[in-house]
Image (cartoon, rainbow over all chains, first blue to last red; front, side):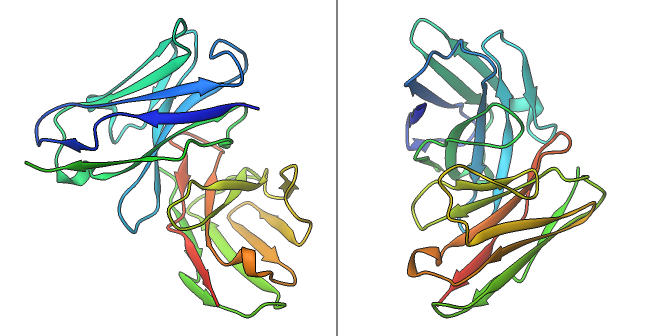
Length: 118
Length: 106
């Protein structure tokens, strides 16, 4: 059973880059047909799909964030990463990593809270 | 983007009740809808995908139905563990989008 764990700074300054990592255990990140996904949840709000990356390197980003998002995979460390640049307070959220083998998400990591503030 | 709208936003019920949550899509998504349960401070948990397919291990009191633009999640005989927030998600087309959530409270 795949398990996911997010890690990264809980506080990021405005205009800087948010960087998070999701460590995968229980299977290889190179296994098919997993798509490695990032989702966020603004405080008290619904969920927003950020995008996914496949171990081959192919990606799909939400157009609303595409200009600021980069995802990558490190097969040697069995983890994948999210970078979101030029952050503002509107990027304050709980960030989840998740996986999908189809087009729904299961399982999810426990989530990591990121606050954008000076 | 496909907009997903859930109703109601909050639902009050009692143990043993049968409840229904509705999710409407701004355009047809065929049967490509998932439902998740989220408890405070926890990640969402997949309950149902493809509108009506129960995820392994999910109690049979949960059921989903619908197609096109209107979908429902029904919970029969509510249990104390069911009081949570429920989210729908369309998995028909990119970007995948979620409803705003329905909080089920006692």
